[in-house]
Length: 199
Image (cartoon, helix red, strand yellow):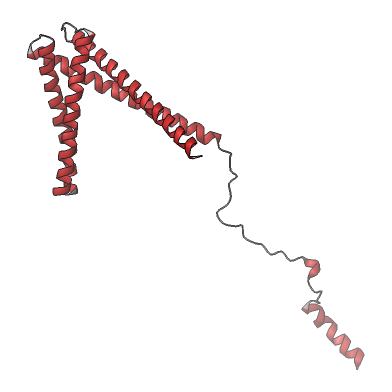
């Protein structure tokens, strides 16, 4: 039993590693394609796939280091200043995007043999294309999750609606079960006659 569980865990971890590697390769190819499209839109000679891969790898490494540094700085400010430092998250993200834009412009101007202004244009278009693609992927994921939730709800059996409170108990007394007592007027009418007969 223990060996079977270990084998299953190893197989699952191997599959996850393969999926992760495949996702990284796809992301790298997409980034290279977007960089080449940005060069075409900025009227710059598009790099070869090798140069595009080199630029993308360097950008990813520098962006990852910058993101880790920003996360460490934010966590340090949260421990020192307190929860009020959370308001610096969005300004920090804006500064990080500006730094990524400027760094991409420097790398594009170096590797593409273009001017710094052209590098700024290429880096800006590349950043804009990445943002649009990320928004599109996020929207598709949300639509897929919403469809899955709706389909899972429709698959559930329908439950009959139960009242929140029990209905009031109505006591019904049948008239046949009541004792048959004479009316008061009938008693008054028959009283003198009954008294005279007795006398």
